[in-house]
Length: 354
Image (cartoon, rainbow, N blue to C red; front, side):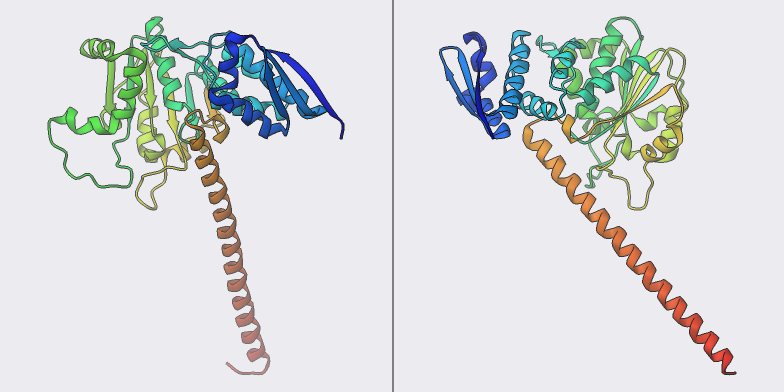
């Protein structure tokens, strides 16, 4: 294995952003590619095996370009650039960054951060109905909200409707105090959080009073026709097949719909089918409907969340494998018993016994 080195010129004003606090990002790159990184006077020397040095250099160049575009580099950016590098897709991280959806109330740009998120956003632009399916932290609801607010501000729709099924996450909360709005608010809090961050509390209250933004439980959708609206159904894995059908048949002219859900986090009673599961099977061949499947690679929360999601995916795959093995073993046992009984009955008949 030949050892080589290369020099990368990183301007001083971008060095801290690219390297991270206490050189945290440089250490991640060192571990990922088994290289040594030495920074001196604005120059970065990378030493190691030739192939790995090239990969490390490529990651640094992509992060530098993100920094030049005004982005605050995060650990998620670093880890994702490394994972793309192994697939020879590292240049796509800069292409993804070009897609600006809108800004938050504080001026922070909202953009897709992974290839999966970019595909999801493009589907929302091009399809009338989009299903965004994936684990927690993949930005399903947040990006849909950003797209909805952008469409509303651009007068592409006349109102935003946000809904989700009012189901407790494995706990019984009992009777909640207050009027009807107070009772449903706890279930809809994640939608409010995203609205406040993107639109600001004042913008939300003003548009709500005018009836231009509506946040309501799914049960309130029955009997309505939702026209010229951007509609988001969140936590769709907690709908029943009847609720999902009811919701999908509310859609009128000029509307765009995004349905988000995580098939691994169902809070429905045991034995109840998920409306999201059924809808995916029933509607997957309709051209006007798009399906975006996000994975643990698209998690953009704290890096620990990505590890948690991955660990659960591995655990569930193993559990499913053992469950299938156990079922096959049980079927084999039952089959053996049936064959044994049949042979015994046949033997008795041959011998003239009942």
